[in-house]
Image 1 (cartoon, rainbow, N blue to C red):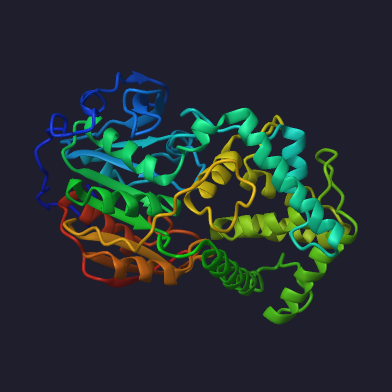
Image 2: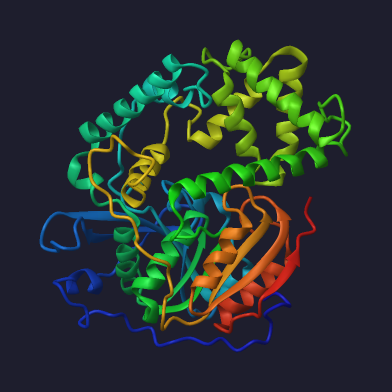
Length: 463
């Protein structure tokens, strides 16, 4: 147990699941128990069954894929993690993360994650094949003329039509966050917990806040790190993201100037931003060389690579090297590999279904703006979340977060009836387990004791 939480008395509710109290024909779902089996490196895997449509619990059923690391000591319960997206596989992320949480938290909780419906091993949405997905991801993000704009519009139609053909209307209609939040309550009960312990990152904060509004009295602890504001229109969110990535890029540049391998000619932010813009235009006019395969490293790929590296400052050295190659010799290979990692393109050339699922979930959750050709109607969550009756919920906001800007964490903490804002003064997307011992200690203490910290600011020691 770490010094931050050593000697603290754990506060745990009785581990009796909600079952018979459920109505609407859902009792059988709530009473199920996962059949865990070993699946390598200490992880156990299982699945749970949920209704495709909660309004028709006796109708079609789907299975959700789960994984867990059992607690190493005296167990409080399970801690459910969602790593973000929408579209990210929780099973793959947990298996690839080394548990994410501290040894102290590992001691007291089974660490559990799952693939939300439509994702990974949970009835995955499928849309484009590899060749067409390559084409879609390479579309010009800044159309220069009407023809390029029409081409982008055409591919939006192709994407939507292909999703309908490969996934079906029934699945596409029920992959939204409202359904996933209901799934998570079934999962809570199936795990044997009367109250949920939850750690959600990025989109996982949107999922967590919707869950909290639907089931406020079924929460023991909840940490929402890298927060979204559920009440915010999609257009405002994307505008905030654009500003967030601009702030993060400038932070990257200031860090770059300290390194001998920094590829920018003049070490001022204004001059370096201009040099980046020149690279985008160069790649738009004539794609960079690619020694990896036959794909073109055009403007879309270069912008994706730069943005991908903004998520964590640990990626900045690789971006410096990739940009140096591009500036020195027109070699875009390293930029392509950065973009591939972000886009879910695997070494064998296939894509995971993260983009397909992201589009499907967003088009159900935010139908008013980003999805004019989507084949099913969406349902936007209509109001600010309050979660009246919930215990204190901890919201973590990172000051220079590119993907979920800090203002959104402030907004969410202010909406919640018992929101507690922890500020992480740092670069990168999300805060927990990224370099701030101060922040980690506060989150760990809260998860173990269920006693919320006071609002405060921590500073990361990581560049």
